[in-house]
Each structure stands twice: as structure tokens, then as C-alpha cells.
Image (tube, rainbow over all chains, first blue to last red):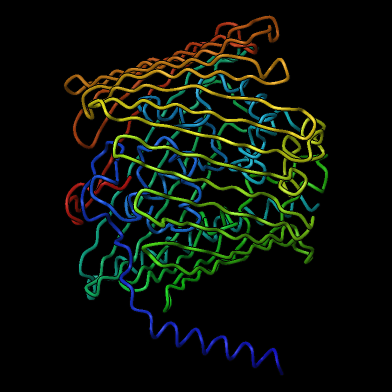
Amino acid sequence: MRNKLAIVLTLLLMVVLYSCANTNSIPRVHPENVGHAIPDCTECHTNSWGALNHRAPDFMGKHRFYAGTARQTCRSCHQEDFCTECHTRKDEFKPSEKLSDEPLRTLPHRGDYLSQHKIDGRINPVSCVKCHGRQNNERCALCHH
Amino acid sequence: MKRNHTKKNSCTGMLVLGAGTALLASTLLWTAPLMAYDYSFSGESTTLLRMRTTVDKKSLLPLYDYLRLTMTDIRSDGSSVDFYLGAWGRTDLVDKIGDKTADGDLQYAYLTYRAPKNNSTVSVGRQFITEGVATERIDGLYLRNDFAYGIGASAYVGNTVLTQPLATGTSSSYQAGTVVYGGRISQENKKYYTVGLSALKSKYDGGDVFREETGIDLWVHPVEKVDLGGHSNYNYLTKGWMEHSYYLSYAPVSTVRLGTEYANVNLKDYLANVTTSALTYLNPVLKANKSQDVIGATAAYTGIKNVTLTADLKRYNYDQSGQAFSYGGKAVYSLPDDYSVGCTLHRMDGGADLLRYMEYRAFATKKIGHYDVTIDATDVTYDKQQIGITDSFAVTGAVGYEVNHKLKLAADVEYSQSPEFSNEYRGLVKATYTFDTKHVAEGGTKSEK
């Protein structure tokens, strides 16, 4: 009985909160065309959006936090395939192979990664699990049975 | 038997999912004119032919095609319905790469509705979920909405997208769960902060729990030039914190940006539920250390026109293996849509032989009329020999030609010398074709990619 009451009260609370909410959705397309160069969000945004400045040296390290809290913001400029260029599954190309004409982009596994993965796997296995470990294991399974 | 069921279910599920989503998308989009305000259809097909010879003299000539499609219906009330699809396929023209002469994958295929108010979103299909503790690819349903007082909530449920069934002889402990669900509740003041609480649970067919995790996340920007964020994730099955990972960025002036990060990871808890032997905590290489701490710092200077200078430092600290330092810098001169040139230099100093090396990279790209030319070289020099050599080197040269705004051709050649391969050449030919039915439907060439 108490559980049912809690569920009903929670649903009622959500209905009230939903009714009172009136925020504008984040635009599905960024209002200004930022072109193909790596954008500096601080050129226009002086508020919190400026933190998303893609030219900041630590942006790549931080983008996972932004994606985990405000993915709809990413979607204003990036479609799904932009994410899957790196966060892929069952792919047979390294990102740097598919995008060899984009040397400015920070892409994982450049150069001789067959040798380098032994180093990265020991020094920071957590960085591997961002993309491998639970999916995209095909390349791992060729040697690691 | 379980392995076969998984494979069969996965294939059937993929077919049903793809057909169902495509049918639903077609129905919504192509019967929409009566109520539609604006709809468009766009896509990109990238065909790649890769050439290489293996150490056992097999000539590999696989032909790939990567296809992405987007169908969009923007309605008069500001809401939109989009369908996204990404897939690739391969056929081997000469020798086989593996057991099969052809392979492929559906990377994503989902239909999404977005409302003009409250960031209301409903997505169904194969999609990539990033909500707090969850970074999952699922075949399922995703819901999101803003509520009053800065509260937001999201929820998802679906089948785990497995990339492969269990390999023969693989321990059942590497089997992933089949169902995953979870959500995130957040509260924010857009000007100052966002704080979130998220949870994820994954179960096997029989009901046993594969993963049960919860996380708290934080994003604070108390003043204009400061940005602080991160998350802490807890594993209920191992009853331990998986990781605490936080960063702080500060831009004292417009030309200088400083950043620092800290991460503490308990490997036993973090690696408890992986599905490959390479990254399991049972791996002796990883088991030697119970936890690792990473402290890093970066600095960037952009005071010289078109030049970016950065420096970075990381210290890795382990329970048993001691410390390792990585430090270096990067210099880039870039004129967008004209040419860019850059170089990086990094030093790794660790306790093991493998962890003492220098890494160099240099690259340049130049646009000349319809052509663009790129060269990119990476070199790693080890302090001590690795399998007979001290130097691992790879250089790639690429040339692209833009036939028109829809079609681009490109080719590249990579030469490498490494501990694994003495002299290896790889070639790649690429053709990219883009198409859309309403190029300027959304205000010019959309910047999204």
C-alpha cells in the first residue's frame, strides 16, 4: 500500500513539475554556421557554453563529461556519425585511417598502435575501456582469447 | 548452446529492428506532407578500397562502404522527427580477411522526436546512450524531459548491443548481460551548475545481474572563466567505487587556458564487468595494481595569430608499479581552409622498459585549388630495444581531389616500421559522395557533421 502511494505521489509530483516547466529546447541545429574549422565557442559565448571551446587543449579529455550531462548540446552541431567515427562498434578501420586527411583532429591510435597498445594498456587500461572491453572487442579477440 | 542463441537472437533482432525502424520512419516521413512544414533527406556514402599484404603473403583487397542517412521532418510547431542510420559493409576482392569474405554492421538506426519545449526527446532504435554512468549502445527506447526548477530526467531501456557472441572456449564470465536499463536525474542552474545522479542495471536472460552501477556527476562554472566538472561512479556488485574523475579549467586571459585533472580508479571495481580477457582484472598485468591515480595539467597559449602552443604533463601512480610521467608539447600553425602545419613531442618515463620512450609527430596539410595534400609522420624511439629494434615509425601521405561539392576522391599510402612489421606498405583509395534533397532547408550548409 505504501509503495503504491509513493508511486502515485511521485507521478503526481512529476505531472506538476512537467506542467510548470517551460524551458526552450536546445536548437536542433546551431543557429550560426560555425564552418568546418575547429570552433572556439568563446568567440560568441561568454556564459557557460564557452566551456565547450573545442580549441582548448583539454577539451578532448573533458568531452566525455559534457556528453554524459548535456548530449543534446553536442547534437546541435554533430550528428551521430561524428561520434561513431571513434566510438564505433565492430569497425575494421582505425579512426586515423578513415580520416587520414584530417591531421588536426585528435584521433586515437595514430601510427604503429599495435606496439603502442601494449604500453597504453598497462599505463592506463581505463582509457581502453571507454571504447573496448564490453563492445568493439573484435580486434582484441584476434590475439586475446 | 547459449552462444548460438545469442548470435541468432542478435541477427534476428537486428533485422527486426532495422526493418521496423525503417518502416516507421518511412511512414512518418513520407506520409507527412499533410502536416509537415519542412522535410529533407540527406546522406553520405564513403567507399574505401584498402590494399595490403600480410606477413604470410596474402593479398588483402577489401572493399568497404560506409553509409549514413538522415531523414528530417521539421513541423510547424517547431518539433522535429528525425531518422538516422549508419552502417557499413565489406567484401573481400582477393584473399579473405577472416572466416568470411563479407561482413558488415548496423552501427545506429533510430527514430527520434524532439519537442520545441523542455528538451523533450523520444528515441527508438539502435542508439548510443551517454547519460551519467551509462555509455552504452542499445536497441531500445530513450526518453528525456526537462521539468520545473531546473530538474531534468532521462530514462532508457533496451537490449545490450553485443559486438560478437562468445568465442568458443571463452569463459562464461565474459558473457555480457542482454538487457540494460537506467536513467539520470539532474538539477541545474544554467548560469552556475548542473548536478546529476544516474544509475544503470544490466541483466542476463535468466535474471542474474551483470552490472549494477550508479554515478554522481557535476558541472560547475561559478565565474565566467572557471569550469569545474567530473563524476564518481560506484559498482554495487563489487561494493566499491569504480572511479573518481574530475577536472578544473581556468582561462585567466583570452589567450591563455590552464587545465588540471585528477582521476582515481579502483581497477577491481572498474574492470569487473568487461567481456574481453585483454582487459579483465584477472589479467596478471592489470591485477598487479589495485588502483591507479592520474594527475594531469595542460596549458595553452594562442597569443600569436594562427598559432596554438600547448604543454601537458601527466603523472600515473600505481599501488605496486610505482610512478610514470608523461610530458610534452604541441605547436600548430593553422590557416583554416588553406594550410596547417604542426608537431608534437612527448616523453614517457616509467618503471618498465616499455614505458621509457620519446614520441614525435609532425604533420602538414595544404589545400591547392580542388586538391588537398597531407603528410603525417609518427615516430616512437624506445630507450631499450623492443623485439630487436628501438624505433617504431609510420608515415602517411594522402591526396584528395574535390570533383564537385558532392563528390570527393582521395588516396593515401602508409609506410611503417615497427617491432611487429619490418617494412609495411598500406594503400587506401576513397570516394565520398554526399547527397541531400533540400540543401538549404535548415539555413545553409548545416555545420553538423
